[in-house]
Amino acid sequence: MEQFITLEETNRGMEETRILIIDVDLRRQKFFKESIFYENTYQVEVVPSVKEGLEYALSNKPDLILFGATENSVQDLNFLNLLQKGGCSSPVILLIEINSQIEIVDAFRKGIKDFITFPADREFVLQKVLAIIAQNKENERREYLDRQLIRVEAIQITMTTLSHYLNNYLTSLDGNFILLSENHQPEEMDPVCREVLQKSKIDLQNIKTVIRVLVNTKSVSFTQYDDSMPMIDIRSALSKELNKEVYL
Amino acid sequence: MEQFITLEETNRGMEETRILIIDVDLRRQKFFKESIFYENTYQVEVVPSVKEGLEYALSNKPDLILFGATENSVQDLNFLNLLQKGGCSSPVILLIEINSQIEIVDAFRKGIKDFITFPADREFVLQKVLAIIAQNKENERREYLDRQLIRVEAIQITMTTLSHYLNNYLTSLDGNFILLSENHQPEEMDPVCREVLQKSKIDLQNIKTVIRVLVNTKSVSFTQYDDSMPMIDIRSALSKELNKEVYL
Image (cartoon, rainbow over all chains, first blue to last red; front, side, top):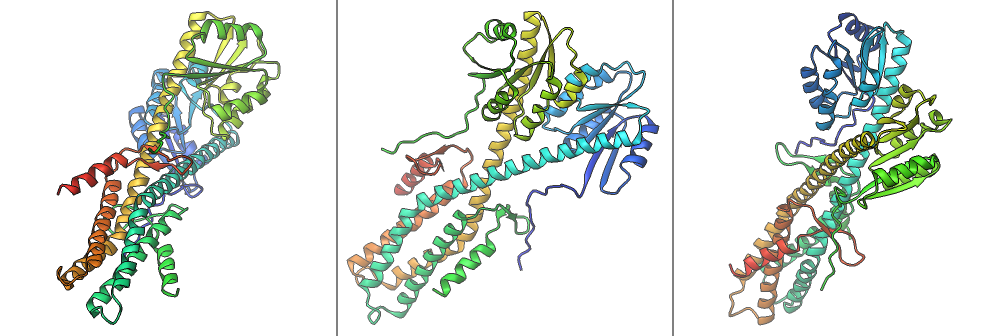
């Protein structure tokens, strides 16, 4: 039995939410881990520096980044630019103290999504982070659908191209087989030759079936055998079509 | 001669920049049209209402949206949410008067990219809008490359799938032709039959060539014949391969 692995892009959706906290303040870390993201649907990563935060964010694309302000946070906020250049669009919430000297307008200009002033009410924080996470998931879902659309279009265009270029050859091959069998009456054709001709006709029919199934493939689900290249999963559609022909 | 039309996604890039101004203030309209975006590389659209602005933005994805504040602008800024839901990520600059009652932090939270307070210095405005337009073009370029990558991957996966499923049939067909010609010595095979067999071998060879060319296609350039479906342009690569075989 072949081992099929589904490579279909997983839509992390509801099942897991990744939170990155870049902060050295232990009380805030504790607050978020114990009062906000305590359920096990949250995967919370806490790092002490922008450098580590950037590394984690670029490879994990978290659903939310919480960035604790430090004395030189305005400079640190330049990492938002690096995030964007690296193709990471995770929303960033800036965490500040009441008497902080952080220029909020500057922080917004650099790309923060929102800010929270501490100490803060648990309910207020919860509502704010949940709303931003939900909006981000909606954006991700939209991007996922866009990518799927691009894939389906590319596959259909590939198959149209292929059919276009193969069609003449297949029609001609088909015609040749008809001529070949007409030139040999069954009684005068030797058995090996007759069997070979019959097999060739079936092979040709199968080639046409594979092309027809691929052209009609509308949903893009990828599978792969062991370590080989990923492929479009047409196994069940193909076997259905091939069985249909047996009974024709 | 077939008429080829290149459907390759155009990267508007440097040649044209679309600016949408949603504003009722005539002095500001004049300022932007005559002092900032006067070169003909800018295509400036001015509309008086959020409703019209939204329609234009969703279908034209401008490089920059300038939104003139009115008395109920904070409510009006909810159109930023609709823009995003519609998949339009054009940056929005809010234009306000010095004594305006607009809450800037609220506006940032709703999604503006920046704001400009009027009256404003021409040089200051120019630097700000050019920087934001440049950043947006960079993002668009990145998204364009991402989409191209998805396309190339989808095409390669399609062709891997096709080769996988066709390979057995093609090999078997090939073997059948060899058997068929071995069973008939040239002198005893009738001329029609010999010619047909020869043509079938060429057809089979050509099918294999088309598949090989498509599998090796790395750049995605689309063409189409008249009103038909778009296709991957493999014409020159294919003709090169087919000519090579003639001289083998």
